[in-house]
Amino acid sequence: MSGWGKNNPDHAPKKYWSLEEAKGKLETYCAYQERSQWEVRRKLYQKGIKGDAAEELISEMISSDFLNEERFARAFARGKFRIKHWGKIRITRELKMREISPRCLQYGLSEIDPDEYYDTLLTQAEKKWEKTLEKDPFKKRYKVIQYLISRGFEQDLVQEAVAGLQ
Image 1 (cartoon, rainbow, N blue to C red):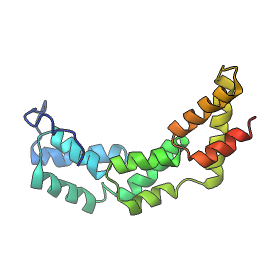
Image 2 (image 1 turned 180 degrees about the vertical axis):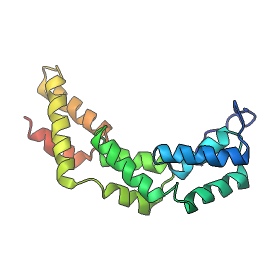
Image 3 (image 1 turned 60 degrees about the horizontal axis):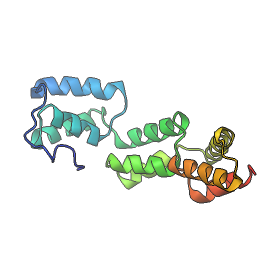
Image 4 (image 1 turned 90 degrees about the vertical axis):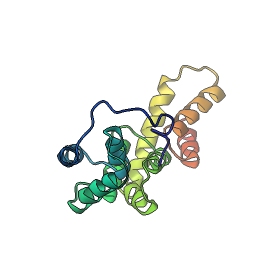
C-alpha cells in the first residue's frame, strides 16, 4: 500500500464509522462514481476501519458489484483521456498508483482509440505551439515537447507531432 497513514499512525480520524454504517456509506460512495479498491481501503482507513474488517467490507462490495477494478480502469482511462487530455503514460502511472492490476490496466488503455489519441495529441501540440511566445524556434520546440511529455504522451509520437508543426 502507499505511504498514507504510515508517517502518523496515531492520527485519529474526525469521525469513526461503525461497520453497519460503513457498509451503507461505502455503497453510496461507490455508486456516486467508479472507485478502486485502493480508494475504498483508504476511505475506510480514514474512518477508523482497518485490517480484516476493512477487507471483509471490500469483498462484500466486490461481490455486490459496487467495486469492479476493470470497470474502474476503463472509466478512469476514458475520462482522463477525453476530459483532461492525458496521454497513456500518465494514465498508466495514475492507475498503478491506485494499485490496479496489469490486466485491468490494459483493459483501461484499450478504451482509447488510436486515431482519436493521435488527433488529441496534434490538437494539444497546436494549442501549446500557438500559446508559446518564445522567439527562438529551438526553445519553442523544446517547451512544446516538454509540455506534451509532461501530459503523458509518448516521446516518439510527440516528436512526430511537433515536427509537423514547423
